[in-house]
Picture 1 (cartoon, helix red, strand yellow):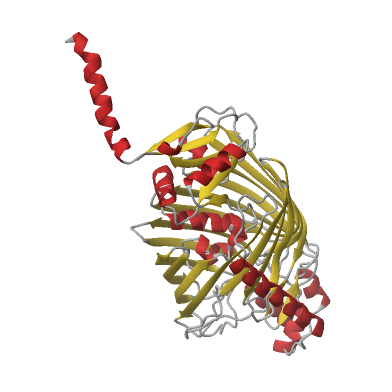
Picture 2 (cartoon, chains in turn cyan, green; picture 1 turned 30 degrees about the vertical axis):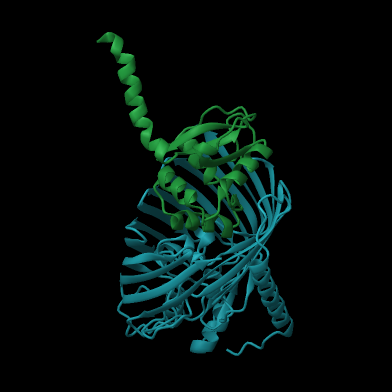
Length: 411
Length: 144
């Protein structure tokens, strides 16, 4: 579908690009002054990535925000990113932060966007309140999914994070820490309206304005960190199914089907439990999640991953295993076989049942530059379609290998 | 025999202290007026990783770190948590770019660390033990 470029959006994109460039230039010339209480600092991160798969039966994406993915030819599309962040400490307890990021996103291009823009207020040392456009921590580590330098693997394990296309909210969060001597308890609660669109075939699912709320409690003791979290979102809009079906199958969605598959005002719940172990050369992560979808159009799922890495000199080899399994919901039975088949087809689009073994290494070549290589062996059921793009259902057998190379850096 | 024991012990202590004299140890210091006398390893880790931002008596911590290029930075994190600087920088990249917290203030030399700690009520930093003076208090010793 041809989307006419909206002139105001192009102007906005140019402004963001200009700001990024300006910030990057300032970053080179303005070292942050440690002693200056009104310090202004600019920092950035980026990834230059290349990845390919072993199949053209589906397109592989990094997450659900990407409208098209990659096949069996090397592509820099899914993992490459550049982010620039400016922070201004207005007063000792007030800080303003803006982050602009350019990556392949829901618009199908690398148009820069403002990832976060918020004011942080610390009324007490262990209490922080933020308001504005904020990253969401639906799951542990979810708010730094694009900062490749900050983690061991090439990208966060998809089986765990794929169902999470949300990046930011317009709202507020409160975080506090209670010190228990050697150990700590930390907690954060957030509420806001989501910001963004999720590509769905040739259409976009507009989730803008959907209320999101969440809470986590975390216990940290020595090398151990354990977190339990809950979050939910109430979708503001229906999936763009009618337009998609009209276009792809020339099918007119009937009111009964539309009502059955509606996502509007449906609440989806996200539960997760994560354990991190980080001691000397060892790094380990174990995470579980469960997602209960309020709509019939999206299946409930459970997923998780385990990751283990050990540093030897400047090289950290790692291995991991992740999985996701979604459960079919009751089908709609209207007595019209054609209609029921179409409904079932739509419902099956969110099905996933696969396990991924991954292994690779991170090599810290220079200070603040890491090179990574990784293999992902995805072994799934042939009807595991989520979250791939352009799946050829007749040929897809659920098995896919992904090879990735990245250079991650911070500046 | 009994009379010789103190002498023997002091010789042992002196011998044990020898390596420290050859290569001075790193210590964590706070502003002498902040009311903190000693800290555990975990407490020091929590402060330098930005997890805990106040001392037990409620005073806000104001930690200062060294620039990457300073050899004591690698020594400090290596003996504190057994981590390479790349790991420490990766940790901070996550904190900073997720918008959770700003990085610690950084200075280029031990003299500047001393100046920072003395001039901030909750100042805390690490330095070579030979640089310590009466205006700061050693709250944790890292050894070699």
